[in-house]
Length: 182
Image (cartoon, rainbow, N blue to C red; front, side, top):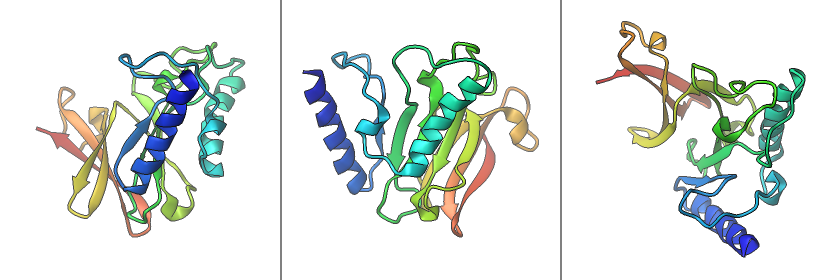
């Protein structure tokens, strides 16, 4: 049964990515889903640069003398089409990863170390953003990833203000715009 559920999730992800809609594939099932055993990330066909980014999380842990705890070896992966080229772009969130030598390696006080990579530049030069949950919205020129970040990123923000990093693809690059959420 867990294999069937995993295959159905993979098929849904593929179909959703082809329709240019946002899709979330989690390396751990949602709470309401039937528990399935974690699968290696190679079970999902990912571009080699994305595989490399995924490996970098384990490498970071290894560099401080640790290993990833538990069976989860893959960060949460969200796909969307930020650059409007019809191919999936990836947002990796390591909140589900735990390093044996540091409980806060991937998600320190500043937030989790998101990595955003787009097909428009062959998934090179992934953008790293430390922050809270990523939300995908529609902007005036296409999709935008919004991540809550620390207030010092927003000019004129008070410590109690919410600062949002809005990330969009334009001029062949990922661009960030910080704004205070009112």
